[in-house]
Length: 61
Image (cartoon, rainbow, N blue to C red; front, side, top):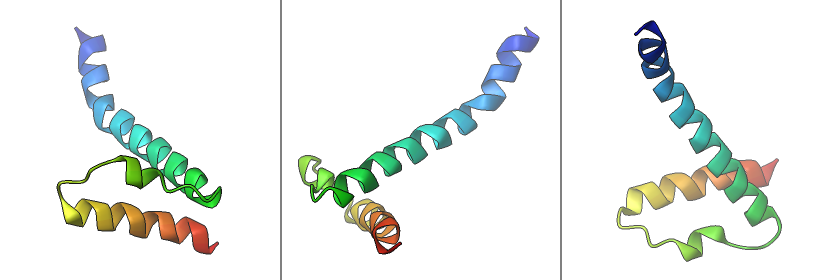
């Protein structure tokens, strides 16, 4: 029982880790000249702007 409660507390950390891995993949694809975001259809324009702005931060360095 204690193990499942411990895993439940780790779920947000795992989600953040997966998101950071996805953003690193996007930045590495953009640095190779490919726009990975063109393969996704974003229904929310703000989410697209946030992702592209985050990718541009990595490109400037």
